[in-house]
Length: 351
Image 1: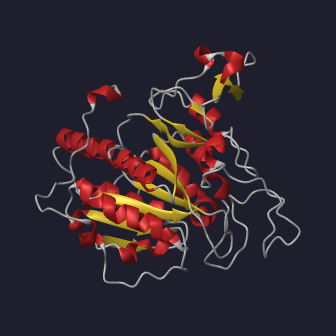
Image 2: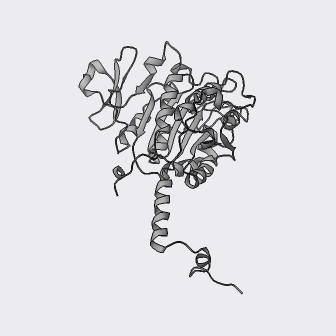
């Protein structure tokens, strides 16, 4: 069966109750370091949730361990503060068993990409119907400043006083390599862009991964500052918009083109002509171009950093296919007999 045969998933019931950001604020004191980028993300999420039109009781946030993982305490929805790196696994069980829920995962670069690496890539591969917000501050903040899987090579921290020797993970590249159906990147301080990406992720059926560049002002302050500074951001950051040429720079003088050797590169538009500049296609079935775009950024200088939706394609979610399979088997066999299954031919007695 082709994926085009699947209509949008609409199993989470809507509510007629008018809601505001205040309705999604819990009575818990928000306890992050003053100035942490998590505050901006929390505020944006609380303001965005009413747009979903869902009852609070039908929304669940699942987190792992880390500063970002305190998120569920501060939202007046259902939530689980789970165990290190395992939030995608727990959320998978919840999403597959409760299709009436909107399930969100809150994680960080250490939680998701170190101890939780396998859980993350398999959730992406399976295309479970959940949304993963990965806060990336390039440091272990909760444990006081060790380098993380996304820290740039040469990073000096408490655990790498002579500089990190590791090559850093690129979360977007990782997700695209795992065949994720929705992959995006945004920034904590850009409220408008962050909200637009969250809205697109929420509308997607299947796993949506959103990497959020987030500032840790205590242990890694200014990690993303060149992408936020008014004097430098336009020259360093390319905003991806589906159907539009990939151009950036203060005057749009730079763009992305395919080279004769086959790879893509940043070029001066004046040198190659406007017709040579690639058009961004977030809906392309092949993730090759999206992956190539994710590799353009310089992890040290942050030059040529793309943000926006890299990939957004339709493929039936794992939980939808699971329900269809169960219904098909039940219909064919006329119901199930647990005792017969337990005592079936693949069991034996040991005396």
